Image (cartoon, rainbow, N blue to C red):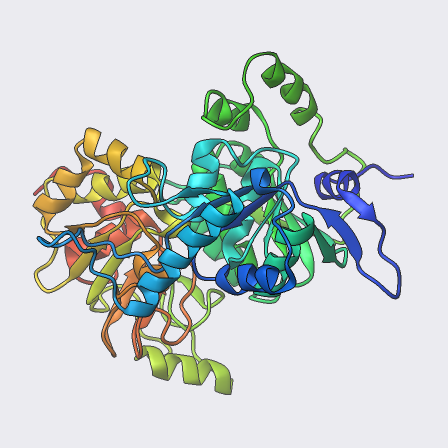
Length: 471
């Protein structure tokens, strides 16, 4: 009998009843994360049926998608984009009060994007099953957890039962070995991977990221990697926990303390794939081959190194449509394409390390006039830390807008959006048509690349800014 993968170990430990040909497995859920957009209907269904939330202590809620990133006006009112957005937020307040669920709301020092605050608080831990009504719940897999997004109906199911019906996914391991070149980060790595295996390359599978390049990543870099697993069709992404994981978690508000910490640590250290574990598919990536990367089309698999040219559609109608929407042509050089807007933030790249990278490019430089640049911290904690380090002053002096925490332009639900035809270099995770505003053209990139594009006002290689202190 072969050994077990990390995924298999967690799946088996949370199995309430096994899958049959007639029915999915029933899986116990350790942590249910909630936000204002996908929860109202689920709570309404519980009320309609007269059901209580089974485990409020295993729920954690925040407001992030519909929240304005501009401060309150002189009248004290927050500038919500619509009455509907404000109602979503107020509804979550009401539901959390009614069911005794912790809510990180306005004025809470831990408020922020749901996939940023879970790890910050230590609510996300190795070996857990974690769900949320949000596609990018895979972020939490960076801690050696099985984490994935669910639909609104499933949100209600978990609220009522603390369990979930699931068909067992397949497995994939992606080994990334070697040293990453200078100026290349986790965002470049995951864009490179999606470009290599395609937007359907991980469909129906849970990906475990492994190899020396992954082991050398910080926790925040691993979160970026796992965050975009869904963009290649995967159910979830995971990294086996190690000392980097344990050092990150120790002392966080909701992490175990005292003797309990030592007990959990023993369990966590066993959470890795056995040497003889088998996977349905294994992909090997040479870290040295990865360059600063940007998307050129309308899905995250349409990627290219910033110094390369746009690939030709070659008769592919879907690719031709994407190039037309983006206003680019096959053979056109990526570098020096004009950029109208730069967005640095999101659950993919809104953490303190991401902002430090952006600041390393923007320090003592000015953003190109006419290139609107929004920098949005992923949480109140990130905002406080950035301001304590003076990063906000670097951004403001460069000409950027320093905003309040939230999802912001990633999904553009709160009024932070681009105009039709504007080219947006974004550190978020999706570049579909209209994602950041009707007719907006999104190009995904790393914080370093996005900051370089802000300075030059064009698609640029960030490495040209790394070794120079010139103004």
